[in-house]
Image 1 (cartoon, one colour):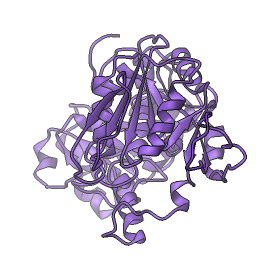
Image 2 (tube, helix red, strand yellow):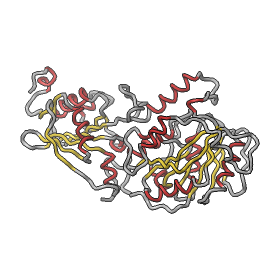
Image 3 (cartoon, helix red, strand yellow):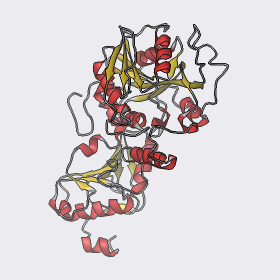
Image 4 (cartoon, one colour):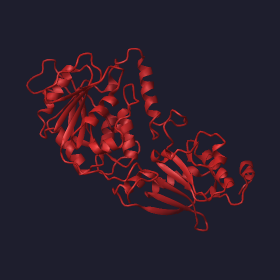
Length: 425
């Protein structure tokens, strides 16, 4: 299959990559940390083809060796996403490995990440970030004493990494285990998904958002335990956040959570009930055959929204658009950002719409056709990530059928008044 379709950005498979790595180091006012990290990059068993330091508005420009590309942007608040994207745009390697200035890699770090992406070009690979305190007077070995002074690692993160160490592992919530400080991926695919969301203007979330979109569009997530980098100081959740003194700690945490929930429609980060112009696009989108009459379509959509209130509806029918429900849209981009498509082949009513989603997940199929008692397709549900991976040539497409769940049936000749009044059968 070639060319674009309604649910994919494109059908270009992930390109093979050579172990040619660009390292993109994010920096802001961490000059001593940056010097240590650059020294560590010169000790790598796999030498990078390019090192970029992208500075997010430090008052004094960082000092870097002549063979390191320095990119700077003015200080207009926390703009890590933009700084990383600037490095991504300038990258010449097949793989981009992101680091923070205060996260110094062990000698085998780049080799381990590059090998993971070489073997799985669709993988967004995250290394292991460990925590320590470095002395002010750096010894000849920039990592000397790191193990002896190691700090505790977050247990939830270690458990999450363990769950995405094998090919094909992970689920819709695995984006929470991806951190930009130890991240690597195919340069082509990083650009394909649009890099980091530059509208993030406060600490945290831009890496989760990238990983969520990467996963949804068909890529894999992989933890590479052998790629170890040492962070100077404890995990961010265990230290005061001082980069915006105007806000109380609770306000910063709330802002970070709101920023993520407004962009990600997967649990456990998505809003449970809120939906609007500034929240994430719908996770589930309903489409329909053109053959449905206006009566059948209105009953179907009303029934579906009653069972799935956060559903998005994609249609060009005036009978629905004129009602003004913001969940009813004409924008086909709804499908390229959705995780599940529900397609009505015929008018469908009832209350068991959530059962369709549960059945789709359990089936393991790309598309599941739900059959009525006569063996006719009433509704189809598609796991769009599986569909996208099939279109990319990363898996074989699987279609299946299932009896319609109890509580759903054809609209048939039932009127809208009968449906609304509760006497339609």
